[in-house]
Amino acid sequence: MKTLYTASSFVFDNQFYRVLGSTSFIVFFTAYLFILPATYTSGHIGLISLHYLTWQDGIIAFVISLLMGMLLPFIIFSYRMGGSAHNASTAGGLFASIITPFLCC
Image 1: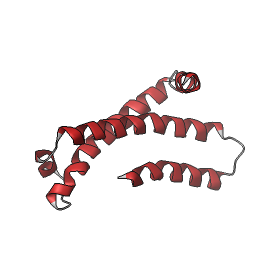
Image 2 (image 1 turned 135 degrees about the vertical axis):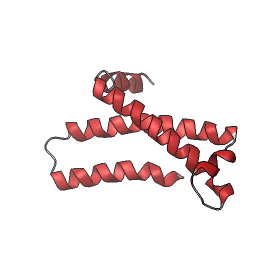
Image 3 (image 1 turned 180 degrees about the horizontal axis):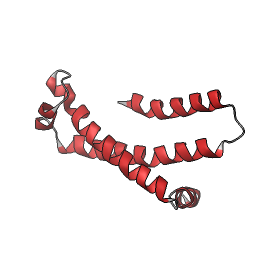
Image 4 (image 1 turned 90 degrees about the vertical axis):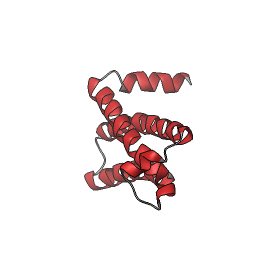
C-alpha cells in the first residue's frame, strides 16, 4: 500500500497528470452512466439509458471510472519514461494497455 501511495504521489505531482486523471474520470463516468443501463434498453445508448439507471449502476460506473482515471495517467507516464524502446512496439503496448480495461464491460 505504501508503494502505491509513493507511486501515485510521484505521478500526480505533475499538473498534467492530475488534469488527465480528472478529465478521464469525468469522460469515463459519463460514458459508463449511459452504457451500463443499455441492457434494459435493448442496446440503445442515449438519454433513454438514464431512465433505467439504478444506484448500483451508478456505483459501478463510479468505481470503474475512478480506476480508469487513475490508470490512464500511469500508462501515459510509463510510456513517456520508456525512452529506449522502439516506437512501434511501445505504441502497440500503449494501445493494448488502454484498450484492455474497456473489455471488462
